[in-house]
Structures are given as C-alpha cells and as structure tokens.
Length: 120
Image (cartoon, rainbow, N blue to C red; front, side):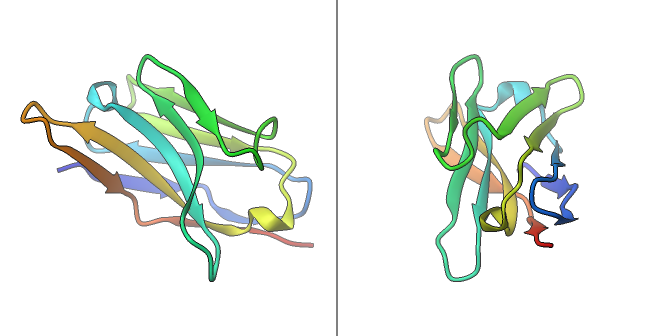
C-alpha cells in the first residue's frame, strides 16, 4: 500500500508560480513512474506530467515550457514547479504513483489532491 500526500496548492494570480509537493510513504525509486494529474470541475482527470523512473518525462502540451516535474529519491518526494500560471490551470492536482509488482500486476495510487486556483 502506498500513501501519497500533496501540499503546496493555493490561490495565485495569473503569471504567478507555485510548487506542489508530494510525499510518498514508500520508496519512490522502486516505482515504475510518478506524476501529476489534474481535474477541473466538469472535466475528466488529465495528465499534467509523468516521469518514468530512469526514463522519459512527458508533459501535457498545455503546460510544456511552464511546468517542471522533479523528484528527490532520498526524501521520497516528487515536485511540480508551475510557472506562468493561467486561469485555465485552475484545478485539483493529484499526485500519482504507478507501481509494478513482482506478480506482474500494476496499480495506480493517488493522493487526496490539492486545489490550485489561478485568479486575479
């Protein structure tokens, strides 16, 4: 069982910055991937950024060049640096861990979410 806890959300003006943090109860170095998703009211949950352990990092087109995902394996933390925020970035942001088990099964774990509101 993996527990993820996000923090760092809040209200910010357009053009501002926020850094989201995600603390994992387990060793993130052992996970297949970690990332961030978001869900705005009335919309489906969508990928924001996903980093595959030892592999590539993928970003949604809408955040490329503005958002950066990073990780600190020693602290079991994942971060999302968000710059140049826009009103359309307003959403609940969720931390995600993709874990592959020795049995061959895979599982997605989710945090409880943190609200990001971009408004003047």
